[in-house]
Image (cartoon, rainbow, N blue to C red):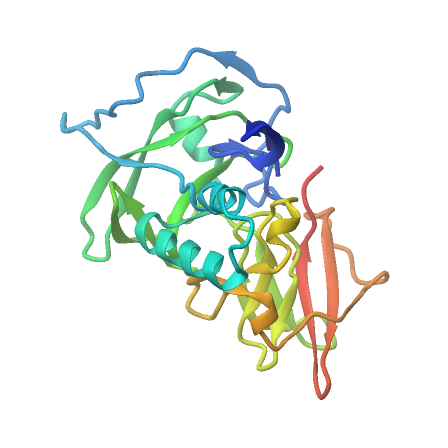
Length: 291
């Protein structure tokens, strides 16, 4: 994941960049991309005009993590439970960013190889569950990266065939386009060949742990700030992200890294963890960050 160094309250932090970057570990579409990016002036960020001439609704990347960081800096005594509650209220309000790998977005907007200094509107079209198509302005910075084209989408939930986006503060369930790829975490059997269950990863974070029943996975937030060490993101079978307080959880975090496993010619960043609990163990297949 690309990170942006900012100065907040006199202290420097590395934050995930909202918009687009090399945050995904695979290029499933097999698109040939260049690592270079040409800075350009941003287009008008107010609206996008689709073919029917009506102004498009906006999709703005979530700022949940930035809000939690500021809350922690304003009140050092805030507890992990309080941070989790605040974060979940913000997810309900503005969604949580999932990085979607889709060079089709950059290509259709004719911005392959270009980078915008400020978020600019990318025209995207989604179809709702009733078959009605709507054009949106996805606010992002754009360039083609080593592992594809990663756009931040603020989501309330994500599944293999549908997702709930947040547009102008309202959740909207839409059909997930086939060329919108996300990194996956897979629960596999001992042979490593059969997938038992899978979850979608919000970015390139390896899994932190798994629930005792094997139905929920956990990730670090992605922030290097020690104040977030006791906060994790949980994703369950329904693909709904929520923050949880690690001290309040009874999850499996003890893990062993696999060194020898079948290689995937299409994924140089493949990895496996075996999470070992008291009475059970789980093998998770995932991708390390793209470098």
